[in-house]
Image (cartoon, rainbow, N blue to C red; front, side, top):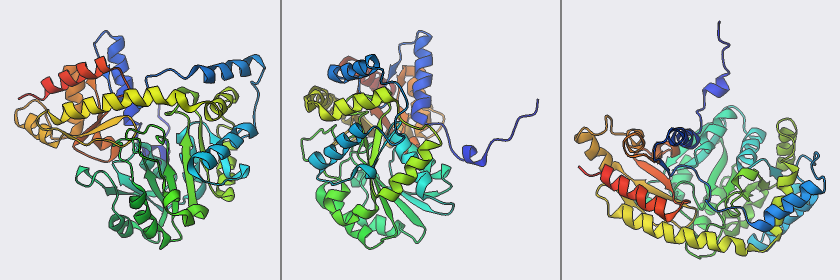
Amino acid sequence: MAQITLSNRVQSIKESPTLAITAKAAKYKAEGRPIIALAAGEPDFDTPQHIKDAAKTAIDNGFTKYTPVSGIPSLKKAIVNKFKNENGFDYAINEVIVGVGGKQTIFNLCLAVLNKGDEVIVPAPYWVSYADIAMVAEATPIIIECGIEQGFKLQPAQLEAAISLKTKIFMINSPSNPTGAVYSLDELKALGEVLLRHPHVLVATDDMYEHVNLTGDKFYNILNATPALKDRCIVLNGVSKAYSMTGWRIGYAAGPAYIIKAMEILQSQSTSNATSISQVAAQAALEGSQDCIKPMVTAFKERHKYVVDRFNHISGLSCLMAGGAFYAFVDARGAIARLHQTGKISATTDMALAEYLLESFDVAVVPGSAFGAEGYFRISFATSMDNLQNALDRIEKALKV
C-alpha cells in the first residue's frame, strides 16, 4: 500500500527528545529494568489538596461544559491580579488568554505573528520546543550559543548582532529550562536597551519557572527592567511547575489585545477552550495560599546542592549552581572525549553518552543537543533524594575509565 506524503511542515520538525527519552525509559522500566528516569521536567509532588478540592467541587456542580475559548472570566481575573500583585504589570481582561498548557500559548503566539521568512532569536541552551514551533510557523530560528563560559546567559552584544530586519520574535526564558540560569535586573536592562533600538522585534518572555526560586532573590522579567517594551511584549506563564499541575494543562499569556485576540482565533479553530475543570483548579491555585509552594522549593534547594556538588566531583563533568527551576545542566565534553578514547562510546556526542548511560547503567538523561548545546546533558532533580543518590552513583561508575 502506497504511503501518503506527509506535509513539509511536520517533516521539518522532530519529536520532543525529552518525551521520547521518557517514553523509552518507561518502556524499559515496564520490562522490569531498574531504570532511574531523570528526563521529565515535572515536580514529583502531588497537586495541593485545596486545588484538587476545587476541581472536585466543579465536577459535582456540573461545571463540565464548554467555556469561552480564551478562558473563564474568573480565572482571567485571577491572572490579571497575579500579574498586578506579583509582577507589577497592569493588564485588562482582553489582554489575557488561557491555553492548554504553556506550550500551546507559545504555539499560538508563533502562528499568530510569524510568516515565512521571519526570524526568531533563540538563545541556546533553549527549551526543546522553541525552535521547532518557530519552524512549524515557517519561520527561521536563529540560535545564539550561550555556553557555560558565560553562565548560559545571552550577552547584549550577541543579541545586537543577531537582530536583522527579518527578526520578528526574541525568546527569553528565565529561570531557564534546561540550565536554571536566571537573569538579574541589570542583565535584563542591558538586553532591554538593545531591544529598544529595534522597535520591530516582539519580545516573548517565558516565566514558567518563576516560583521555583532556588536563591531567594527577587524575580524579575524583562518588563520589570524595561517597561517601555510593554506594547510589544508577551508574558507567558502557567500553573504547571509552581503548583505541580503539569497534567492539568493550563498555561496563560498576557500582551497587546490585538495579538491576544489573534491567539484566541487560532485556539478557537484548534482545541477551543482549556478543560473547564482545570480552569477552576488553576483559579484556586492562583487565588489560594501560596504556602504550598514552599516545601517543594525547599526540597529542590537541598537536591540541587547535592547534585551540583556530586557532578563537580566527577572527573570530566562541570556543573554550575542554578538560580531557578529544577534542572542541572552538566558540561560533559571532557567525559565524552575520554569515554570515546577508551572505546566505551562509539561517537564523541552527547547522544552517544545518553544512550550509554541508559543502555548500560539504567539512567535516563536528556542530551544537551536536544536543547541546542552539544556536549552537555540535563537531569531533572524533581525526584527523590534516594533516586538522585543512586543515579549519581551509577553515572560516576559509568564515567570511570
